[in-house]
Every structure is written in C-alpha cells, then in structure tokens.
Length: 261
Image 1 (tube, one colour):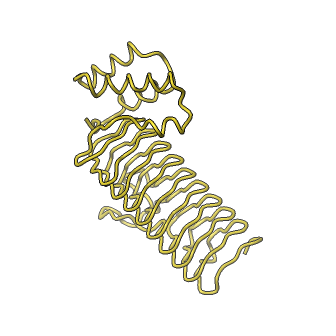
Image 2: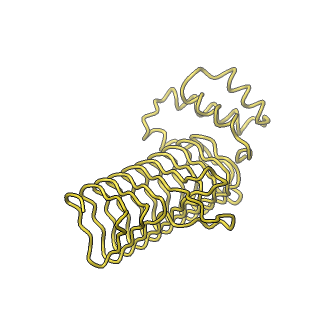
Image 3: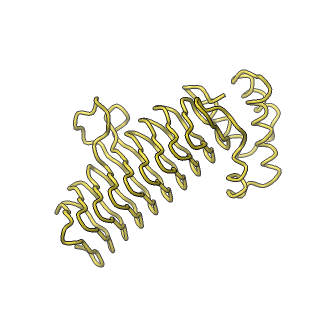
C-alpha cells in the first residue's frame, strides 16, 4: 500500500500489482498481477484491470469496465502482450480495452485525455492518440490507428487496419471501412465524406486563413473528380506550405486501404 491508496475490502488486488500514490480501488474490482496504476488512478466498483497493463495518472475507470483482458482474436495464444494507457483518461461503464497480439506488435497503445463512453470497444493492437472522444457503443476492430482530437459518434463501427486522421469526425452509426483523412467528417454506410470538421478545427485554434486552406485541400481531394494521386500532386503544387498541409498529404500518401470517398 502506497501513501494515500485505498482498497475496498471486497476488492481483489494481486500483491504483484504496482499502485501509485493516491490510488483508489472500489468494491469487487479485480486488479491483476502485471498491472501498474499511476498516481491518483480511480477504479470504481466491479471493474477488471488485467494483463500486462499500464494505466497513467489520474485516469478514472468506471464500473464494469474491462481493461487489459485477452483480445477477441482467435490467433491469440497467450503471448505476453500489453496495453499502455496515458494519463487523464475517462473510461466509462462496460468499456473494453484489449491488450495487443504478437501479430500486431504486441501492444495496444492509448494516449492521454481521452473519453471512452459507455460500451466502447478498443480492440487489440489499436493505437489511439490524445484528446479523442469515443461516444457510446463505438467499436474499433484490431490494428486501427486514431489520430489526435478525433471524435467518433455513437455506435460507429470501424474496420480493422484503417486509419483515422487528426481532428477527423465520424458521424454516429457510420460504418467505416477505409481511411478517414485529417480534418474531415464522414457519415453513412459505407461512410463517405460530408464536409470538414469545422467546429473541431476552430476549437483547436486553427486560424481563418489556415481553415480556408484546409477547405481548399478538401475541395481538391473530394470535389474535383481527381484520382487520389492527382489530388495529392495538385495539393502539393498549389497549396502554401503549412503543418496542416504536411499532415494532410502525409496521411494520404501513407494510406494503404484507400480513403473514404
């Protein structure tokens, strides 16, 4: 027991688990032997944190969440994979975050400041950035990469191996089977572009001139009937240099599954 740590008498905390300062473990929760909880982590009642799992400081795990358990992958054979979560995450009721698999590099990685609402599923070998919002019932297949400040609407389902760019927004109920470029909004089954995440961009502090440039890149990619390669060449040639242009083009060039169009 470290300073300020409280464990409810009904909780089961393995003696090998590492608990930081001020950790709180609620009634009937289970903390496995390979778990490391950072300072001031709060585990509410009936939650399970297992596997080789690291939870960053000030994260709050709500009742009935299942964190670091074995992945839903028939190829998994008990390898010593891990789940690494950053700081200040909110993991709500019935959320499930799995450890990785040998076939995906052996780790699932979650950044900091994310909100995982009720019944979200983050599958094995996913990589999630910072300050993302996953609404109720969102399901991520394995090996998905999600950039920073992405917003994924309720009950959206994401196909394995796709990538979601920074500040992208996925509408509720979307079925997403290809990559979603940064700054863009998609919706539908199968998801297709429906504009820019203008509100998210403004909240992120993007200035008006840069927002106009992003709108121009969106138009070149989605509204001028260019192939992906031609759109990339046009954006590269005609748009002024900026971090937003670099982010946009780097994502498009790295896409392997193609983008939602």
